[in-house]
Length: 299
Image 1 (cartoon, rainbow, N blue to C red):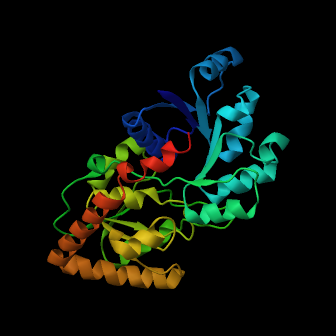
Image 2: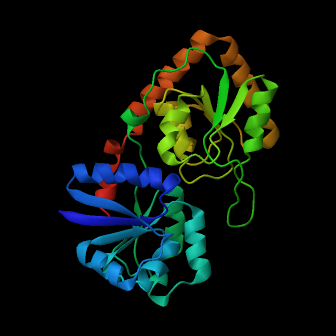
């Protein structure tokens, strides 16, 4: 059995993704664990990990930390979850050995990132690895009516150029304009999110840039009304049945979102039916079992 460590941040989205991924990999003959890169380890301790595990998976900009612990390049797997990861690794010019990515494999979680890395002509060719969720973990019967609007990520965030990309205040504005309760997830640990989705009736994503947009996958499985901009995975899934897309433009985002919230607030049967449709889409498209083969190929 191959043995893998995800050397990454454990508290937020990465923790949610990698916890689920570890469980799915185990079903497929790969033993995987999480190791928090925010903790300092002794070289003696890390040598024992290197001796015990076949691969260490981390973001491209964290390769230098693995090299600090003398991790062999052939044991390193890089996975970029956002443009930030790619830009930061190039910005720091971490190490001449890693600028060419002479490592075991390099994964990206979206076709957009695949195109970006391919354009950089690295010596190693990137592989697409799609994020998923465990549908049954988040499944819940949809609400009977729309009363509470949720926001599943950080309210504010910037990309590598310093541009504000989250715009959570726009969701709050739309909720207030329709007299709906606004209940963001704030800084909840990823382990609390399944419970959080039970407290809201809709999840809205207002981002102008997302790598994945994980809350939209989780909320869909929870049977929530998912409304969002065409970014991340929702750019494709929103059109196919995973929710309802609204424009990125700030004014149009607010006005279109208000129209949708008003409609589903005043049409309970249509609201419930839409939530069921979104949930069924999530059942057959978002579960880890649908994408796990891509991850297995990394190793």
